[in-house]
Length: 199
Image 1: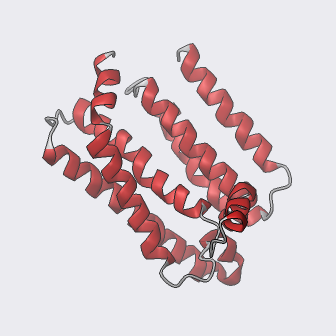
Image 2: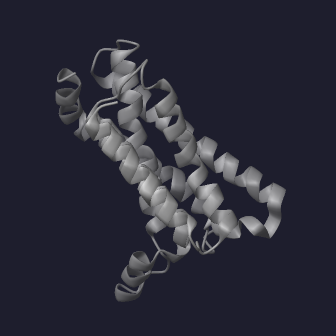
Image 3: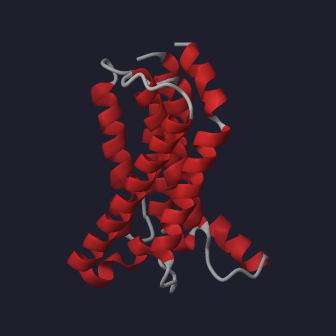
């Protein structure tokens, strides 16, 4: 593992350890950081067989930090976004929306890189379409997982769901993930390609 990748991994573990001390709700923290831990675990286990670009690894780190912060404070109580809510007289804390935008935006690069480098799909509209479809499927699967956890644990999962009283929260979450994936695939492909060509 090269030094940059080791550095990114170290930052992840520092953030994870920080978040484990006195989170707002331990159960919510566990549910929110678990996908980050599992994702990083998969990356470590497959590192020798398939190395992503440093660009993608950096984005993955950003995504894990978004998850970790959401786990520590809960998505409905993230302080910076509470401040934004108060200043702009918003109806809710929008950190959750940022998280779901990232849930589409960042995995789009992961999916895109796998499809280009392993499946050898040509760059173009079909690649972008498939990237967006996979990201939307990931988002929908996560919403189904949230529903399953809520059904299994009852009110203990309220902070995990983070609906903040919005009956359309699930649909908004998937919509923001869709926007993130579309923006990623349609506007940042050329930047991503430059990093792929450097491999």
